[in-house]
Length: 277
Image (cartoon, rainbow, N blue to C red; front, side, top):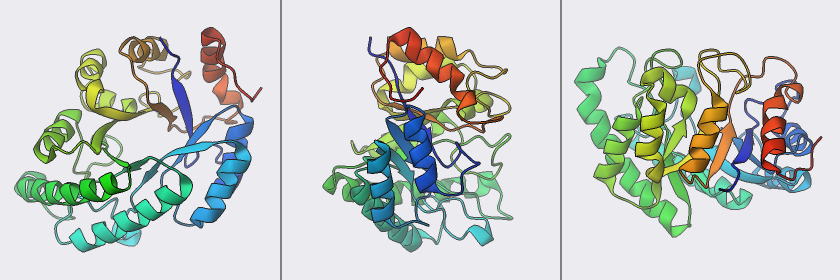
């Protein structure tokens, strides 16, 4: 069984550093070979690509734009009346992905509109999402890119987010039926919403294109105290044959590099060569 491959989410890690390029350099020095950036759009794609190359990193994931942040938008894929803005954002994301050599884009579903009842708008939002995903799938397939759907928990992180369970996301993927779309499994969100991680990982891993990790409930390092046994979970992913990246999307409790002791221990156990110390 091949060891897992980890990517540094530099939107979360190295918060002591001011910008994405500096965080990319730090990730490379820490031994990572891959990185992900939630929203790279404050920097030019050329500058980010240059920084990633200098750090020896492959960029493996970005998100579509969040929309109007001042209005509380967090993605537009399922938001009624924002279809044109979603498609514009998709074009921007594809431009960045191509320039960065990044093969995956998280297609953010977005939030239930303010003041709306979730159950009352669920059907309309799903219809919008399915239509937007079919469009996105065609665009992504032409560029040899993959789109990802990520459920985000509505119990702690974002009560208004539309897509909140793996079951809901898998059902939507089944309706869209496009090979260029896959599921993004953030173990933090899945544990909070449903638990049953062993069963859910085994059930949904065949359609998973990317994994992210953080401890529950505080969203700290996998090595920190919490509900989850990551030694078991990493072994489960290996045993099930997962070949993608595992994104480190967590909130460091202190110095990021010191907090990577859990990852260095994993690398040591698996005999994994790395450049960092």
